[in-house]
Length: 505
Ligand code: NAP
Image 1 (cartoon, protein in one colour):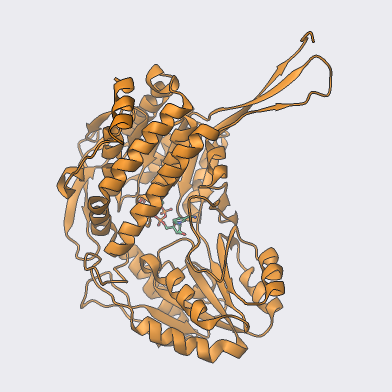
Image 2: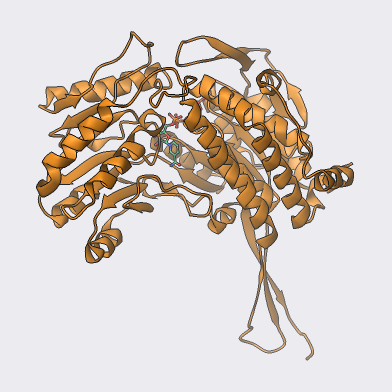
């Protein structure tokens, strides 16, 4: 069966499958190759944040369902239809999945915009970006090399091999409903793991849609399992404590990440955490200001500011401050806000009421502490309940929430600085360290600052930096491990050392 699927995929360049949006929307979870209801029959509604309308109802799955999903993934890990595949065969299956996602990109983007509120052009961009991880890891699957190392004693060969980690549980957020899954699942499947995916409550439909395409691509039953729920804690508890789960990969808030880290301690589970940031964006006097403003807009307002690598605090050097603010105000005023399915819209709604309340509270807190609102600063109930204007706040300082915490919304917080040392000290004055950005045309300064910023990723004269080829991840409380790049596979393999002794040469 698998052989014929692999052959069919090869022969037909992975086949042309066209589906309309309704056939990709699934209203069941997925365990052991079957679309299933929750064991208690409960469902929950997935709504469109632009207008509050229900898009679909999905199963509100339980700890029991999570256990079934883990059992299916565990059984499949050693089943011949998965365990006996060569790296090349896994690569072919991943390429087939990639191809089907590509062919259905518009339908997937429509689902994503409907459930996340993301402008449609950004959703299309996310399909390209997210799918690039499947393509990348399809290629990497064939390059998970071992080593033979020279022995210090005679008549021995020392061999290092890499084997699949086991069952990997993948817990993902709503802000990138496709890419956060493919960045993990692509690497896990390439390495030969099986997975249990727990998508965010707000955006399970994109996850289920790409799972449907994984089935069509011929990925065997039990390799991918999806547990939809709005009761994350009991499901998360099973994933963290089951002895049959070898590792957890989580993307989301630092608070939940710490909880999962603690819950995994007893089982000494492998854990990979991609958590929140508090990214500095520094504009030095030597910067090209046009480029810096464009980078600031791109980094801040993508996905309505709900991006973990979004710049959170903008440090602008005194000499270019006034000019930077003028240029910025003009560009922010031109941003178009509205429902994401209108093609010209650049700023959609916030994802849910909790996010909306948080963003409003952060701006109100800055107002109370003498922050100055120079653009926006208000909700837009005339467009919809969850819309908040693109906002610029100046005179931001500690202990304003906008300074100390990640706003995760369309608010650009500005801090004036004098010296390079001051900018670096303030940029590093946080327990987060995901991404950072700076603009400078001075090569000496570029290397000095790049070495000193305490973050995992830096954009230098660039506001958008993520790509499948580069390692994504943070330092400090922003996480553990890296996703994407050839390092991304490391999270899903075990290293085994073989010592062959008493050889006769
Ligand atoms: P979140 O509340 O931490 O949720 C993330 C995921 O964890 C969701 O699937 C959520 O389920 C689940 N979850 C919540 N409580 C859980 C528990 N007790 N046990 C197991 N799973 C649990 O984060 P969010 O609000 O969705 O996302 C925003 C945060 O994620 C921001 O801080 C952002 O910086 C960070 N983020 C980081 C990256 C990165 O790569 N570093 C990327 C994107 C986002 P429910 O949806 O059902 O609550």
